[in-house]
Length: 508
Image 1 (cartoon, one colour):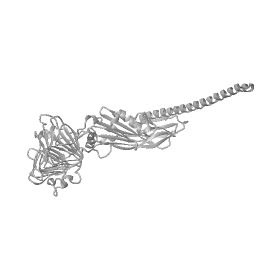
Image 2 (cartoon, one colour):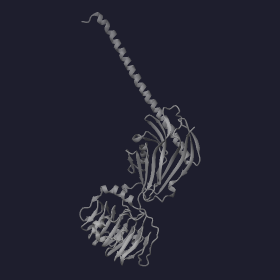
Image 3 (tube, one colour):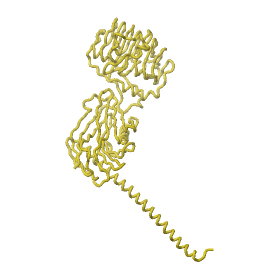
Image 4 (cartoon, rainbow, N blue to C red):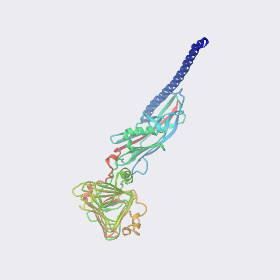
């Protein structure tokens, strides 16, 4: 039983509890409201800074593209919590296959606003929010790929590190066009590499421009690499021999039925009406980068070389040292062979069959050296058409054949003779050895009787004994080819424009 005194306390207690609950709820609402206001305030501040830098970027790009413009730009961030400074931020490099020096190798500076973990920056023509993998693109740089052409304007910022939060003065200093004096980039790979704390934003821009397949992001090194261009060798099979270096008779009675063009000396007489001349200008792009990319994109899906017959398709081997003949059947289509090492044929041969009446071709690409001989060693083509077999190598490839037959083409251009000797000759095929009188030769033909029909583009050459080189005029219409599958070809690039605009930045 509840007595009367207890009954009187019950309403009072209930009222007290209700008042307490309302007070606690009110405090929670105030706390939540305060947090929301703080978040909203931070967002507004970020948006204000971003808009300020978008306007700064637009003004900077306008001044950069001008001849002598000067502008005063209000940042409007005098009351902001963070500070604005000019910082050393990154690096940009542009390279092209076959060119020894970079087209541009330029450090980059950024105008950066920083408030704790909040960063907004202008770099190289673009505006970014955040750093590292969280960096996002606010305003895109003017770098643009369109219709086989790529234009890359780069803004070089000069000035002191301290920059006013309120107002800055931008003055055009000068412009330079590094791409003006380079050879054509058509047929070359071109790589743009950007190292930057805002790399994720750069990656997003280029992925939109050329597709993410050709943009490589290295998070550990905060780097973005963009690949453009489709490899197209710049040489042609318009003579028996094209050589960087000497082409010399190394003894015996060798003969050449076709022209020889060499940068060095030529002491072999060609059969009339062909010309064999030295001191020529031979400037052909090496295939090292092209072959490396071909292996990178195609080796993983290639078939292994099992058995003695290859049919339409792509094949891969770490090396190709045959002790039995290898048949390449062209009846169903092209055959591509990738050899990431040496190719050796000791008294064995590659036989190319069933290519007559078609445009099918066997192409073999190697990263190593080639040697063949032993009497029956070499390459034969059933139709005697040398365009059906095409051998491609890097600028370091050495080729030797002794006592054998070769029908086909060899394309391994270089800027200078290769170093060292043919790896296969000493340990595998001594009967193809040009030593000791011709260690200098990148190509050694004839330590016995050799019948070579086709065309050779390579380095210095020794021809000896009863070797016979015969050029087939039908090769003049054959184009050397890097057989990269279409799905792996980067965007085509015929024109490249790189412009560096220098702009001085100072506080007002």
